[in-house]
Length: 62
Image (tube, rainbow, N blue to C red; front, side):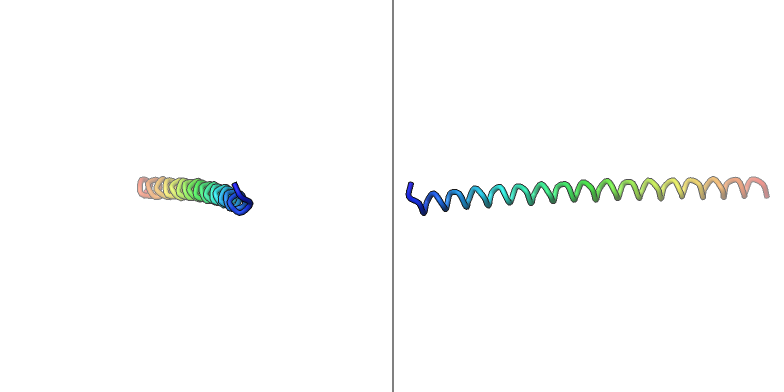
């Protein structure tokens, strides 16, 4: 291989590694976003359950 081809191959390998790092970072970001959304939805459902219980108790006593 000539120096130019060697340098091109090295730069291509470097770009492929950088793309892999970027994709891995995006995967982690998407996973963290999904976990956060699930946690927020779970908290909202717990608040809804508490409100439903409160309303049910209120209607049973009147």
